[in-house]
Amino acid sequence: MERYKKEQRVIIVNTHYKCGKSYAETVRKVRGIFGRRNALYQSTVQRMNKKFEETGSIIDSKLPVRHRPGRSVYIAAVRGSVAESPGTSIRHRSQQLDIPRSTMQRILTKDLHLLAYKIQLTQELKPTGHMQRREFVNWVLENQKVDGNFSKKIIFSYEAHFQLDGCVNTQNCKIWGAGNHRVIHEKPLHAQRATVWWGFWAGGMTGPYFFENKSGNAVTLNGVRYRNMLMEVLWAQLDGMEMEDMWFQQDGATCDTARETIELLREKFTGRVISHNCDQNWPPRSCDLTPCDFLLWGFVKSRVYANKPQTIPELKAEIRRVIGEKEPQLCGNLIENFVKRERVCQQSRGGYLSDIVCVCVCVCVLYTEIKISALFE
Image (cartoon, rainbow, N blue to C red; front, top):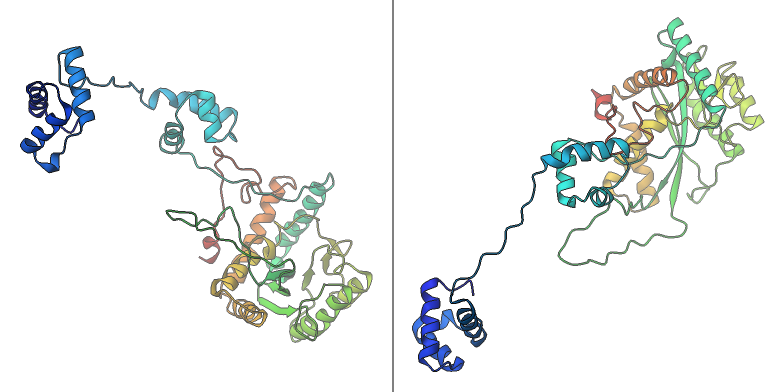
C-alpha cells in the first residue's frame, strides 16, 4: 500500500464506492486512470477499503520506532568482560551481556581498539626444560661477552621435509562466490616430498643436501645417511675455512646423536659440538632459539612454493635457487637476532619468548612481535 500516494488512495476508495463495492470493476476503472504501469490488485483495494471502514483513514499508521541505546552505554561492561575472560568469543560474549553481535564487534574494534590474535601452539617444556634452556643461553651470552663474534662462529644445521603439494590450510583457504563452489583438494596418502639438510652461519649457507636413493626418491633419515652427508657435503664445504674456533650445532634427533655421529663430529670440531649430551648441551624443545627454526625455515618455504613446483625435480630446483639466492645481509641479521632472543630467554628464566613468540594470545593481549621484514632492514 505504500506505493500509492494520499491523493491516489482517495481516488481508489471513491471509485470503489461508485462501482458498488465491486473489486473487479474498481480495478478496471482505476487502471484507466493510473495506467497499466501502476497496476492495482483486488487484494490492495480490499485492504484499503477495510482500513477506511474501520479507522476512517486511508493513511498507514507509522510503525513504532525501536529505541536503541548508543554503544557508549555498553563499553564499560564489555571492557570488564574482556579483562575477566579474554578468550570468550564475540558470539558468547554478546549472549552473556545481552548485546547485539554487531554492536559487540564495533565496541571491540572501534571503541576498545582490540585485535583478535590466534593461539600459537608450542612444545611443552618439561620440568628440567627451563633449567637447560637457562644454562644454554647463559653460556652463549657469557661467551658473547668474552668474544663479540662468538655467535658468528656457530654453524647451525637443520633438516626439513618439503611436500610437493605444499600445505593446504582449510582455516585460511577461503573461496568467495555467490554459491558453493564445492572445491575438493585431493591429497595422496603418502605425498611426494624432498628431505633436505642445510647448514647456516654468519658467513653464509652450506648445502642443500637431499636425502634420496638412486631413483631420486626421498628416504628416511638415519645415522648412516647423516654421517655420509657430513663427510660428502659439509666437510668439503668447510675445507679452506679456519676451523679452530668454529662450533657446530644440531638438535637432539636420534640420527644426529648416535655414538658414531658424535665421534665423527668431534674429530672435526674438537670440543666444539653443540648437541644432546655433547660438549655443550642443546636444550630440548627449543626450536625458538635457533635461527633455522624460528625464521629461516618459514622464509625458505614461502619462496620455494611461490612458483608452485609440480614435480620433485622442480621442487629441488626451487630449493637450490632460494638457498643460493640469499640476501647479502640475511645471515648477519639472523645471527644478531639470535643473540637478542638469547637475552629474552635469559630474562624469562628459560621460558618461551613471550615477547617475541606469543605462546597464548587472545583478543585483549597486546604483545611485541619481531617482524620478519625488520630482519632484512
